[in-house]
Length: 288
Image (cartoon, rainbow, N blue to C red; front, side):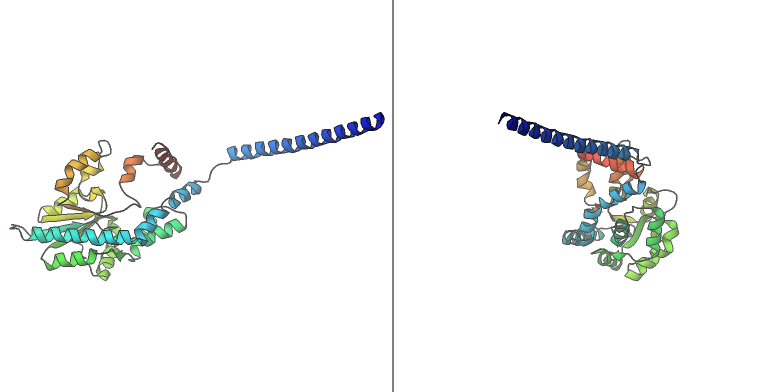
């Protein structure tokens, strides 16, 4: 009986030792595998296209909201209606010079969401070459209320100017796009594109030297004044609040969550890689 118990005990110990050995082998294999995976991860050079794709995907919600939502459609109708009220009020005042309005083009008059969709679907971002190619397709549609507003201005004897930072080389395509949609003044004298600088002050002054500008319309604060381009001494929210009462009768701002000057105020003016942009945006988000 004693021998049987001893034999049984030894057998159980042997099985337990074998089990422990087997578990140890498995754990060792997993540890080695993990070390290998960690080593591979740390030595693998990230593909720059991965960062570009991640940045592109971050635009999905903003682009869908801009292109598809009833809220955005309503905002454009509402803001152009507000602009109409302003010009009707101002045009009746006694003026020594002819009146004019100044509009930005992209995401103010023309809808370029299809370009955004194409780039996002390919995991790509904005490039000057791809943008100019899109412009030359003359495929942008009119944004809600924009055509009716500009046609009304022309009917009331108010000249319509378009000041845009599209490149001067795309002027023929831009004029053709505007003309096909029925926008007034689709002519070189009234469509002022970028030549040497993206700053619009010189072009605005050229218009104001001959006309009384009743209202400016755009999707960036820089469509109203270069004051908002200063990255070294940026306008604070408090300063903007103090400027608002006067600006509100001179400038109509349209929504654009997809892109804009606001990103430069977050990321800085210097050129950055897509990896740097992505990491900086993530750090800003985590800091809130």
